[in-house]
Length: 121
Image (cartoon, rainbow, N blue to C red; front, side, top):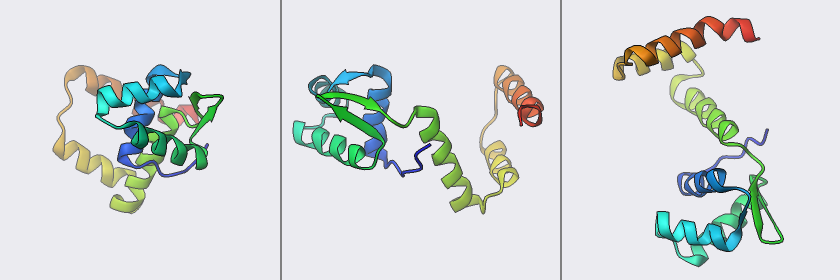
């Protein structure tokens, strides 16, 4: 897994890419213009930066991801835990529970995840 940091604007392009890949770079540029209001130059600059860092690839004008949405989200969570919660998952969960009230379905899903967490290792 690539642990490169993806900033917020780059992540927005990646979201479009993940939903539409593989995609022609011209089509990706049009989607970025439509959904993000970006110019052609901005889109191609972000594509180049992400390509240079090994997060996406642009081969023969076909753009695909090298880092999945799940990998990027996992890296973001790891960074959040380290930077804001001193690496403590319980501290993160305590803050989350104080700020969010899951509905019954979400509570059941979370309970199942926690119950199965130790079993999947």
